[in-house]
Image 1 (cartoon, rainbow, N blue to C red):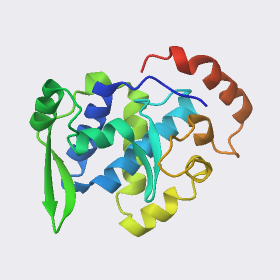
Image 2: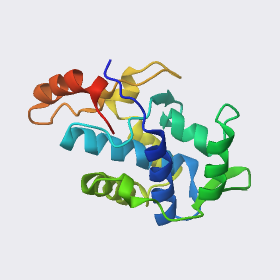
Image 3: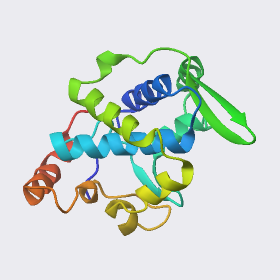
Image 4: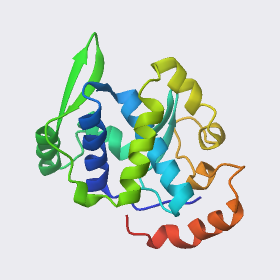
Length: 181
């Protein structure tokens, strides 16, 4: 299984970036945008943006650390929780959580290609409702092949039709453990 060391600060900045461009975004949409940004970047540039651990959940892939940030998980250090509170505003409307940015994302954390893929994922997903976005991510091979509530394999993020797919997968296997995101 291809795995990366999650860049936790970059995960937070990516969530802020997406929320900044989509005030009041649902957790579901935000997490799917981040998944697609990671997938696009991995396929084009041979590395994900943040390297979060993606878990197969009933409504699609969920970045584990990203979700911990959004739900303000109890095991996060106090300093991280304060940073989250200063960065993201989380509200509930009719029981459904939504997110807005409280500050601008630190763009210095991202490469030009990171931002390109984040923007593409935002544009791809922003008009989709919950049902259609869920149906779309359920077609992803990485989601289909994983067991429910288990980690998804980054190798399976690579589309079958991608030219030089096998070479890219070989590269990912060789470099994932030493990649700095």
